Amino acid sequence: MARQTNAEAVRAFDSAFHDVFQAARDACFLGAAPYADVFAAAAPYVYAARFADGARVSVRDDRGGTGAALLGARANVCADLLEPQRNALARHWFGSPLFGEAPEDADVGISRSGCAPVRARITLTLDDAAGDSRTVTLARPVPNDVLLSFDPEDSAPAGEFGVRVAEPSPLREWSGAPADIPAGGSAGRILLLLREDWHSAPDADTDEALALAARLRAEGFTVRVASPTQLPAGEPFDLVHAFTLDRAPEMSPTLERLRAAGTPVVATANFARTSLEAAWGPSLLRGVFAQKRDEAELEEFCSLIRARAIADDTQGPQDPQPFPGYDDAVRNALAHVNALLVGSAAEEAYVRERFGFMGSCVQTMPYCPPAEAVSPDAFAGTGDFVLVHAPVDWRAGVPLVVRAAVSQNLPVVVVGPPVDGFAYRALLELGGDLVRHAPRLDDAEMEGLYRRARVYADMAWAPYGLSRLARAAASGCRLAVSRQSRAAELFSNVHVADPADEASVAAALSGAWHGAPAGSALAGQQPFLAIVSAYAAAQQACRQA
Image (cartoon, rainbow, N blue to C red; front, side):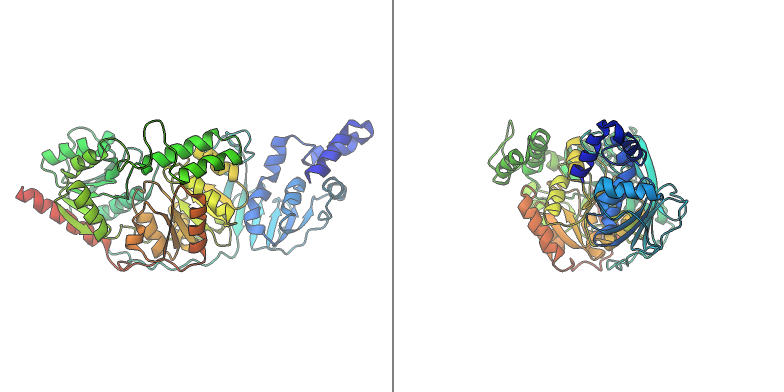
């Protein structure tokens, strides 16, 4: 198509061709109209590619020439540009016979609101996003070489359109512990203490804390969810529940102060198999992707990272601590903890052997109650996909997961805010119809993604908890996880990969895609009851101290 449009554009310098070129420009054809206008007109068709593979697509759009021609490479497209002369020009300009009449019935319909509607399972309305359709906002990304995105937080909106799915795909049933009914009547002030970046980079620990906060409030407790710097000095609490002690230096001063005031302290440690790799791997990958000149150079450096044959300025990957003083910082934090929630006997043994923890340990699945779900088809498409629910950064391993999925021709849906600019750029550069990203979705649509995803992937170098993996397993997903994770201790049928090795990640994704859903011996456990028992153990320990 590019060769054809380029040839037509060159003819524009012939004065006899001026009227033809102007007509193509008015129709927003590639090669005649300004790029910004072409991309805005073609964006709905790029979005529609997630629905259109092999489908019958009917288009009624006077500015849809470029988009329809692009979509025609993968679908059976019939496009009406609403004027016979414009249809004839499009057939000549794009060298394609797909322009003419558009049928009333199709699998996918794309039209303007003033046109006769297309009867289709999936409809895109280009100038009217009202009603029960999902509104999609087009933005021009900050990287100039990335042409478009559907993230309204990227920049000022450049247009919007509506997507409606008439027959949503079925959602799987929840197979985890059913939601219990609050008894109510309790009272007290509880602090749920999170890492400093919990709000800007939400992860599994954030989900668990927020779900637990809602459950505790339903029982009658007053609950504060905050990081250490968000707490006014001297604010009193009857109990503290801290999350993710891998971030111990942030937590310790607050835990020490509250414990000294006689406040019982419980922690969900979320300990992974933490070593220097947790910091070394993300740091090096960020540098390599930020400075790569081409794919050959990228592969050369990635092969060194896979082999653990490269170091940063100070250390290599063999050091057992992710940063100097890590073990001492964790020991100091744990010294103020009365009761610890762990996911497995192996995690308890790890905490006691590595850090010398002597307090009470309560084994439990992460707290992740079921939620109301709605179909995510208008965003995710109607086929199977890999779900990645994590901040877009190097610690979470998002760019390598997406590259690995694309290498296996697997559609991948990423939900998480862009935390690192280079990681987000890598995600946008992969682009294409296999990759869908949203910084966040509402709770019901997010639940729908879990109930629809075929595979859930978590390739974090330093996982922040397992609640999202537990949610995925209870939703019927297959699991592909980093070898840094403790998921294999809680779930069966888990496919494990080296987060530094794209081929290893690709093999895990493929194995999970063709494998069985994850399971767990603790699937029927009521985590809230285990958490309450840990609270009781911490209070008793305080009374006996």
